[in-house]
Length: 365
Ligand code: XIL
Image (cartoon, rainbow, N blue to C red):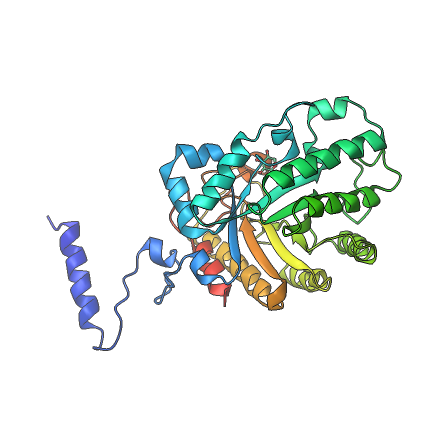
C-alpha cells in the first residue's frame, strides 16, 4: 500500500527539483492559499497585511468555550466588537442595575491580546430594555436616563473602548425616519436628540471616535442622502461625529457599481469610514438544496476582494476599520436571520481560511 507520507515526500522532491536555486519553494495547502489555487499565496494574516484595523464581532461564550475560536480571533484580527453583549438591552438589566460581566470580559480579552474594541451600540431603537420601554418616559425623562446610561458606559470604558457606534439605524429604506415605536413617537426632533447623544458620549470620553452606523448606506441613495443631511447638520451645530459605518451585510450578487458609487458618495462626508458588520451571503435564493461549491466560494472571494480594493481607494485619513460580523461560518447570525445554509464569513466551520480570506487579502494594498 502506498502511504500518504510517501506521496507527500515524493511531491516535495518534485517541487524542489522543478525550482531553480534562487526560486523560493512555496508549499501550498488549503490553509495557506485559502483554496484559491494561487501559486504565490500570501501567508500573512488579515491583521498583518492591513494598514487599518480588521475586526470581528465576537461573543464571550465562544471565546470562553472554544479554544479554536479564541485562537482564530487572536491570530487573524486586531479589533473586536461585541455581537450583542454591549448593546443597551444586555447591559442595562434594570432601572437600578447594570450587567457588565460580558462587556468587561471582552474589553479585558482585547487588552490582553493587544486588540482594539469598537463599542456597539449606545442608542438603537431595537435594543432598549423592556423595563425601559414599559416605563413610558416623556422626552425629558427619557433623555436624562439615556444621558446617564451613555455617561456611565462610555465613562467605564474610557480609553479602553476606542470607538463607539453612538447611534444605530435611524433611517428607513428610502431615507425617511424609521417608523420605530421607541424614540420617534416621543421626540419632536429625534435627530436633535441623537446629536445630543454624541455630545454625551464625547463628554464621557473625549478621545473615543464616535460613529453613526446603518445598513444599506452605499446601496440606498435616499437613505444616504438623509445620513449626509444629518451629518451636515451635526457639523454645523458642533456635534462631535467622527465617522459613519455601513454594516455591509451584502451578497455575492450585490451590484458592485452601485456599491462603489455609493461608497464614494458616503466618503464625500470626509468622515472616517467603517465597514462595520461585513458578511457576504452566498445562498441568495434561500434555497434548501443550496451547496457551497468551489465556484460559489470563488464568487464570494471576488466579492470580498472587490470590497477591500474599494476600501483601499479611500483617502488614507478616512480609513478606520473593516469589521466582519463574526469569525467562522460555524456561528453566524445569518443562519437564523437568513437561511440555515449560509456561509458568509472568512473562515469555514473548521477555522480554515476560505477563498474569501484570500480575496480579502488580495484587495489590500
Ligand atoms: C444582531 C446579532 O448578530 C444577533 O446575535 C443579535 O441577536 C441581533 O443583532 N445590525 C446590527 C447588529 O447593527 O447589531 C445586528 O446584530 C445585525 C444587524
